[in-house]
Image (cartoon, rainbow, N blue to C red; front, side, top):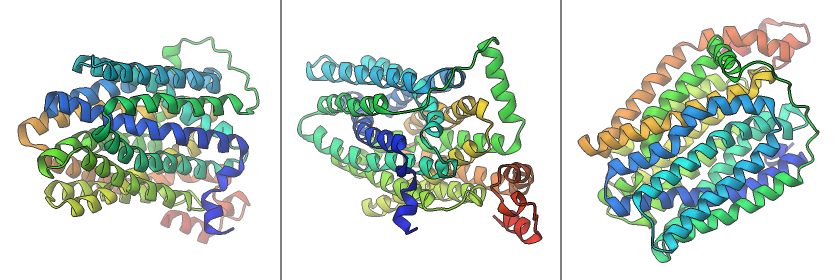
Length: 435
């Protein structure tokens, strides 16, 4: 198997292939909208704090609602729910575009519509994460599919912001939102074309709060899941909000405009794409816990160095490294969670993953916006990067305990071949410990 075939092996599954290409088109529009929203808010207000408010409004529903969405993902038909969420997102983008194109847009409308999209995403993201496993007939390709999902997101992140920067400068933000609305049509069509075996919905007699409690108990009583989620939450709170401050760096520090912003976001996306492809090329999940610690440390160092840089091309290289580290940590965490979780709790654990990765971001956006208004954007990123490095160090110290807990599970699932075959060779166990 050559390298390209290895990287793209999940695409041999028809359902996954359809979903992959439909989502690829839609995500270009999604990234165009994300850049257009923050630029529009900053253009109207000139306030970093308002950028934080917009980010908070768009992300706080994920923190509040995603855990409940995970229960729905474990109960109901995931494909039907995804069709509904994608259709609602199309309507939200269309309303936003009409408000701008008719000249009626106001900041409070941006905040409200960002909140609406946040509610939609609160259901869409954990359901979509849990749905991936239904698209792959061979579970050995699941890790590759998750890495390709990340590649898809970041390929779109590379294209979308660059196109958005050009469109904003030439025809305005409204066209970005309109094109995003149109981009939802292919993904809805791909969902309708899938041939997914009918999965009988679980008959639930227990209250939704009790099922939610079971999900939390399961996650936080198993050390590997708990540590992955806590590190994700820390990075999302203190590190990931660097993205919301990009307009400040683009305009006030590098004295650029929407072109500069678009290229800064795109270069970070290129780094993330490289990280996703690196994971897609891996043949095994063994060693990913160590990779998570290293990637988190790289991300923290990257944004610290970026906070000191005043040369645009140097800052671009640092954003490339930061994007690589952030994506490797996020996608590797996703892969490991999907691998070790019990099937009947998959939706709930992926909702907690969403809550940790995206649900903490609104608090980070609000915090970074407030800090940037008082101590400046560079010092805000410096503080965030230091917190990420501390989190990576603590996670690294816990690696022996994680391996001790995960080893029996991997043995039972046949992920460690020597154990699966009953050999239990000392060499095999030593290789696992080293990874």
